[in-house]
Amino acid sequence: KLLDWAADGGAGPVFATGAAPATLWTARAGGRATRVASLPPNLDVRAITWLSGNAGVAVAAGRFGEAADRMLYLRPGVRVAPRTEMLPDGAHDPVPSPEGRFIAYLQDGGESVPGGAEAGSRITVVRANGTGRRVLTPPRRYSGLAWSPAGTLLAYAWQEGGRAAIEIADVLTGERLRIGDYRLEAPTRSAPLAIVWAPDGTRLAFGTDTGTRDGFVWVATLERR
Image 1: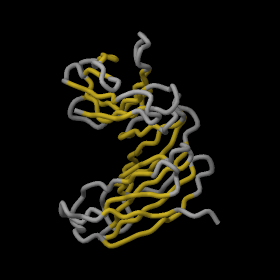
Image 2 (image 1 turned 30 degrees about the vertical axis):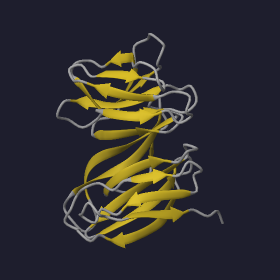
Image 3 (image 1 turned 45 degrees about the horizontal axis):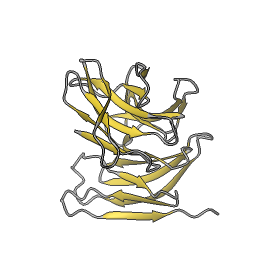
């Protein structure tokens, strides 16, 4: 039901099947699928990420019917139990950095977003072992968290009223940079925006969520000054 490919091309896809428990598999091109591990029966797989190098696989998981609130780290071919890193209370939707050094997630704080009464979240980053917590953003409605290939910059989108903006944050310094903003063609929609980095880290592709299946995809080129 979920799938991701190894970034270095040396391994095939990793994917999940079934539920209660969900089972993770991997396969090389032209080979049979090999079972990696099964999750505890009370957990559901929400996202799978092949980590770069030989760091293994990171799985965002949560209890059935609830938001993802933990990261599980597995190494295909190594018969050890997955290492689990729980997020703090009110945290959800974790995204690991490509090499597995950091975890970015949304932290609910019961605060209102600017211009409305809707509760907002802050984007927060911690090391993979849960230490070194850094809050990157003020409370807003965020989506599209995406790590740069080097694993030090985090791109994300936020929506406010009928507008959306794309920003980048340096997770080591906390500095933020606005890439651009635009007016949504369907401002009442709450669907998340998607962001993807180019492999060389110089461009960002992002969907504008125009409310139709023919919505635009924009590309922003980053220049060092």
